[in-house]
Length: 415
Image (cartoon, rainbow, N blue to C red; front, side, top):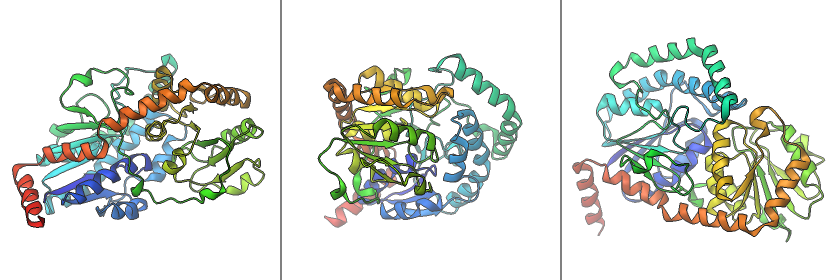
């Protein structure tokens, strides 16, 4: 039995893929402490993890506020600003009860720094594509926007860097790629068939292990007897981009008289009163059990967050992607290039999607079986790469000899 610590990022798209890995490690006999935000305590405990709350510094609400305009430089400033305060509390806990191995989310800069400072074996888990600074930028508009934000927020970056430097300049996050921050092994939760071409394919420190998906780790419910026999279209902008009434109104206009049934997920905390006059073929809720819905869906209208995109592909569902920011646009382009969906990119550039364009995209994807066939093929690549079980295998392979020996003894005792 090994003593493991997992440092999460307090956002649903990052915590949900971690939960199956935690549950698998616990099932294999390991003790797993998981640092997270209070809003994720119940789901972490349900997975078998021992919940440890982060101190003040970063929350799901903070991430939502900073991603509203889709500016990743602003988001990076938030992450770096939170690193110093979070790192202090993490180091105190790890020094009191030193783990055999540290697992951290690829955006958790404090995880990389803690592993370096304490000389702990480490595994990073990336829930996003590898981002190599300016590689893959969507033209001059994205570059100009990021540079303008960088200039504006430069004092915040300097202040964050100085706070991090208090814990030793030698373990500051210098190494590229910018994201994910690396462990001794970095597990990328996608397949090579989906990830854009990268030199990291040949780097033994990176492993592309498919999606970490296990429906038993999700708590949401829905009365599926409310569905009829019409094709099911699922519309969601994920958990961070809430309150986008303009897009949701456009979706209702585009789909109101199509021969489909629509589940519209408008986000936790959104006032459902705004949707009191939704079309008759719509069911509107703050959240649905996304995996169970996608298992039944014919089409997914999505923001193309990587977690949502993978969950759609997992069930072979073709997509119409309406990305809200440039990271999501890169995700969506990979699906469009493969032929599993189409992209409406206007909202990334400040141009709201029009109802007729959304309707035309939905009709085009629905009419061609090749979109569903390609989505199914990409989904198989996610299944075949190993997922959360392969993640657990890789984590166990990184354990010091004492941790592996302790697990072997525990297994023998049970036998």
